Image (cartoon, rainbow, N blue to C red):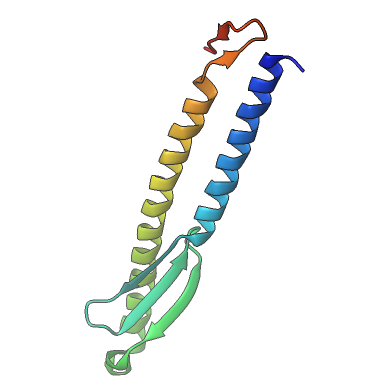
Length: 116
């Protein structure tokens, strides 16, 4: 196998590993937000799906419409926080993937190929 082919394979392995890491980190993202009055806490995953909902003692004193609105607002705040975390992770992933894509490759004669 030529050095250029080995360089390409090594890059592909690094890119695969980076993608696997991104997938694993995305699965670990979660955000939990509690309303100011502590009536509602909501937790979402990295995709913004609700994974937990807790009602505190103040919730029992709220009328149903107010409680429903508070649940939705709290869940939306958690989803926003989760999205911010995901976007940060995605930005880092894209930066590293771009660096790998632009990294020079070595040919069998020792010369270096610089991708555009």
